[in-house]
Amino acid sequence: MTTKVRCVSNGVITMAAVAVLGFPMMALAAKQVSVTLITSTLNNPFFVSVVDGAKAEAKSEGINLDVENANNSAQTALNLTMTAVSKHPNVLIIDPVGSNSGSAMVRQANRAKIPVVAFDRAPSSGHLDSFIGYDAIAAGKAAAKALAQSLNGKGKVVEIQGIMGTNVAQDRSKGFNEGIKKFASIKVVAAQPAGFDRGKALNVMTNILQAHPDIDGVYAANDEMAMGVIAALKARGLAGKVKVVGNDGIADALKAIDAGTMYTTHAESPFVLGKAVMKIAAKVAKDVVVKKNTVLEGENVTKSDVQSYCSFLRKEGDEATCANIH
Image (cartoon, rainbow, N blue to C red; front, side, top):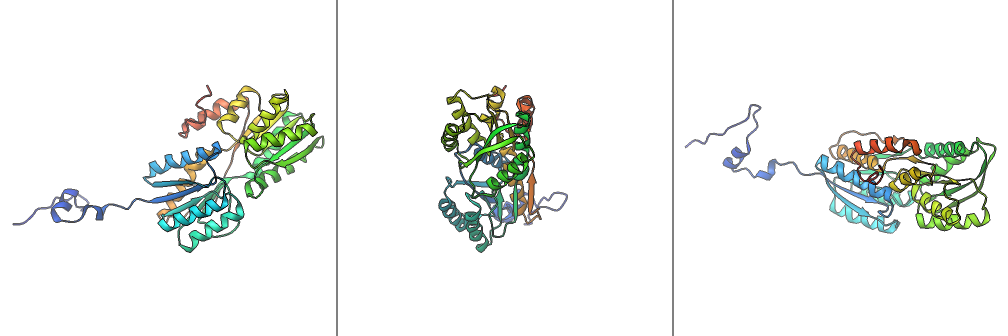
């Protein structure tokens, strides 16, 4: 007896025909792309939002995404990398704890011939298939200009730096100092690192205020540190009086700007960054040629800009950041 097989017009055998002919169903199913993302921390709302964006894009792309948290430990990040490499994902995405320690992560993947995409913090060496991040020098310069404008071009200011072992902290500081030098009547009276951490920034700023109680403005290299700065200022009754400029555009910063305790943030949507890095990883997994370096641009958000920026985030699919801003 002859078995008739129905085919679609382009000659592709239907799944029913596959069953009749005895071909295994899975043989014709495309293997799902797997990606491992190792983030430096999930204690910072910025990176939580990056992961949210990556997850949203992974779902859209049909990618199996495994997210691992290094908890700001370079050794943990390396251990997670070795574990990920043993599972051989199609692509490894990393956000190193430090630029130098990130190189060890890249080398592990390079040896296993696993493509590597990095974001936000660039490893100092090793072969990357692609890197994506915001322009940190431009961010620092924009912050300096905004702070100067808020002070009418004169006053005493403080710089609260991030993790100085990362290119992001180094470049934001470089940009800020290059920018603030253009204002001869503004003096930087103190510059100290606080590790991109809210609690550390609170302590650092509290100590600085003891030595410099008459400051006019503060630049914090990320919004988490800006929140710590504001807490220290509140303790002295200076919140809203001392101008605070941050970086990232996290929910707490936008609320503080809306409330008047923070002047501006150089908003660099982490959700958009997460989506973008996952789009790159999806192309790399399919052997599509991608740009070696993708630079994203942020924007200063002041009180008058909060609503329009929130509208932009919602259109991008980020409902969380502005959930409590109406």
